[in-house]
Amino acid sequence: MRNIITIIIGSVLVGFAFNFFLIPHKILSGGLSGIAIILGIVTPLNTGVLNFLLNLPLLIIGLLKLGKRFIGYTILSVIVLSVSLYVIPVYDISDEPILGSLFGGVLAGVGVGIIFRASGSSGGFDIIAMLLAKKRDFPLGAIISSMNAVVVLISGFVFSWDAALLTLLSIYASGKAIDMIHTNNIKLTLMIITSKGDDMKKQLLTTLYRGITIMDGEGAYTGENRKVLITVITRYQLSDVKNIIHEVDPRAFVNITETKEVIGMFDRG
Image 1 (cartoon, helix red, strand yellow):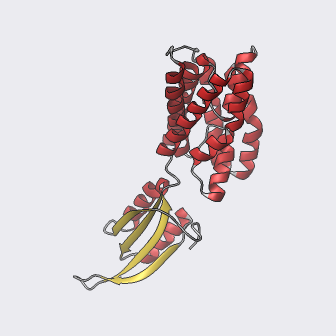
Image 2 (cartoon, one colour):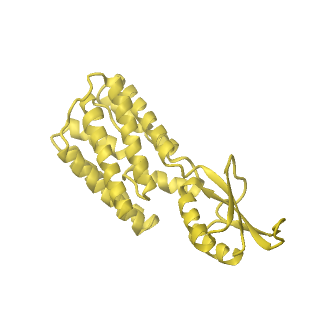
Image 3 (cartoon, rainbow, N blue to C red):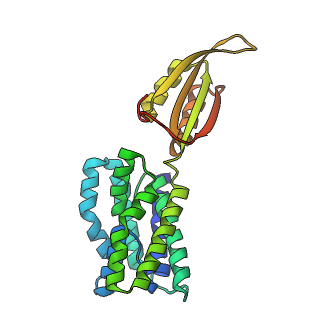
């Protein structure tokens, strides 16, 4: 239920960003949403309806490649965003296009980042980005920004090159906001010292799908034997790991450090 509420809030934020900051100045967002904005401006069709129709093929692909839960959340996000674009009036909240581009980009990025943290996506290029991020561990915001070059070009040819530059600024701001909120690309090294090594190993392997190195340890003061588990996780998984550790051994000692770089097999060790 928490994820569902989070996705709804994030999707509504994106809708506000579009209709209050971007669309009034003919500034596009990235991906299929940007294409939907173009079609919504140059045709009598509503942007929300177009956004939903354009996302249908990718939702089907995502269902095959990313699983029912992720696509279920994504479908929810696409529906809420499309309804928001349909219901929220287009209102020029700022007369300055640059401010509209920056604030619209940041607000849209915050919304998309919130959706990602709830294990969903807003559809469109986000689905492609999630596929690439799962395979090659790239920052999601950077992937999305890279794929949006075609949207910038379309904006320049259809509207003006000033609009294209403002679109580029909006996409850049959005990508930075996404990476600030969705921290899946940040790695953490965990050293867990526990008297319940086997139970801890079992729960971590079942939940995280990460490699774990186990060493024998001994308490210098008590002389009691302990197991030392070392693993690398993403920042996004830290909350789940804390819950696991608390359930298995509330008295475990845990040291968490941020990892600059991982060389070798990150998924299995």
